Image 1 (cartoon, one colour):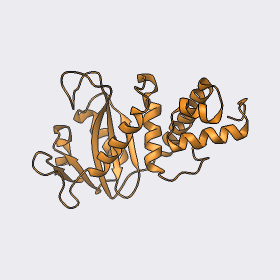
Image 2 (cartoon, one colour):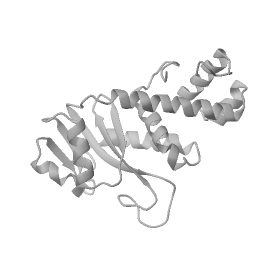
Image 3 (cartoon, rainbow, N blue to C red):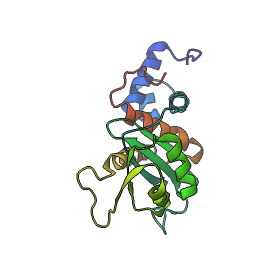
Image 4 (cartoon, rainbow, N blue to C red):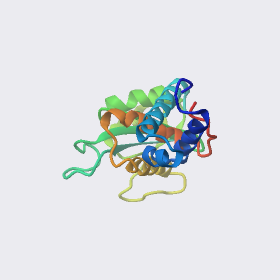
Length: 208
């Protein structure tokens, strides 16, 4: 960023609008820079955020953890939900009262999900999941878990996964602003959504 030809004052304005959730094109008009400049600047901010999060995500999650997957992509005809064609599957972990962690996955099979769970969550933590068969291995694992059957009861006291569901809604709402995210840029946008959720009141220099 220091090598940019954009003045420091305009860089600060660009960061402020990025943090506020403005699109690059709208920000370009407000700050008075070329749209391509704003797009490149925002792209670099997302790269910085992704690198920073990946460096920080070596820590374990413990306590009460919600787990769920979601599928990102445009509206398509045919099958929805798990296994929907053309969509990008993402696995998420949310520590209640804490942060969310996301990872793009090839599928929602047990062989894919369990290594992530064991890598990220401290044994003896309490975890909340839905009835997806990919979590069946938890029945014989070191984790205490509760299953939520959404077809019968969406939430009961602490037995819910509303927290991670709220994150999915926020992330998809944020990405809809772009009228579609190219698949190669999706990992950057996903981590930017993760960062926004984990930092609801960031200062303007937070992405650096």
